[in-house]
Length: 334
Ligand SMILES: NC(=O)c1ccc[n+]([C@@H]2O[C@H](COP(=O)([O-])OP(=O)(O)OC[C@H]3O[C@@H](n4cnc5c(N)ncnc54)[C@H](OP(=O)(O)O)[C@@H]3O)[C@@H](O)[C@H]2O)c1
Image: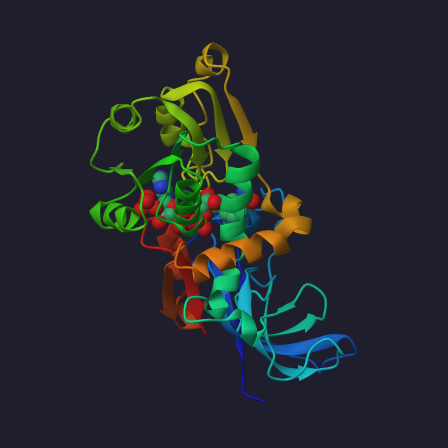
């Protein structure tokens, strides 16, 4: 068998995760047992939300030193001792930052060839049809409580969660405004049909730019960023506005969070702010994936992938997410 490698946690990061927080090691792949499959990992994801698990301050269990870095992946079954999977099956699941893994036959899904099309790639199942897309879907539909004509403001709008959320918002008849870093990302959002964009690195101060783009006030703020961006949105919320707390990417590497200052607006404008854990909606995933796949195949929901080749590049590519390097879903091709 060829030698496969995986990234493990070498030390818990403080601040931006540096390369020496990770160690690249050979996979010790023991013989597979009953109920297990051996998978060659073809792609794995890099997720900003994993940051909390690296230092152990997430809602999900933190990683211990020596643990394989967790992520979603797409792979091919090489060997199987399970009646659910056969060699050659293409599967998605929590495969980790790894070139190969032995996995229980639970928690894996076969990506049937019939689900793939010229619009839907296998990697879509760990992107727009995986956790990022589902976060957009349930955050907007359930916590955002959209009504036609509402103004939807999205932070980190050019990321996989934000870009999906904005397109879904347009299909619901919302006015959609995206905040992103730089002219290239703002131009990308225009191609997706966003009504307006704000380049938070140039359009300053941010609260004035939001006021100009959202003249009637913001009914739904879908927040992936937090901190100063959240305060700038808060002072522009319309009465009865909903704030969906999807992520806090500006806070993840800070030891002392900036937090929220503009709390009074909650009282004066009767605002509601609610956090999302996408896995709470797991029983409804299949239906949502089906509906989003239909939109993709009809050319009504686009997604972009930012694929980097080589497992050895994973730590730098991960840190780059916090510098805004990615346009779309960042994946490693092993
Ligand atoms: N609640 C849930 O269940 C759930 C599930 C999945 C993901 N999430 C969250 O959803 C959010 C979006 O995830 P994603 O996968 O689509 O990733 P993403 O938005 O592509 O995240 C990376 C982007 O965040 C922006 N960013 C990074 N540091 C920033 C900072 N300090 N200030 C402002 N913007 C910054 C950058 O875009 P710019 O260049 O535009 O700044 C960067 O390209 C994340 O916060 C993630 O944790 C939540």
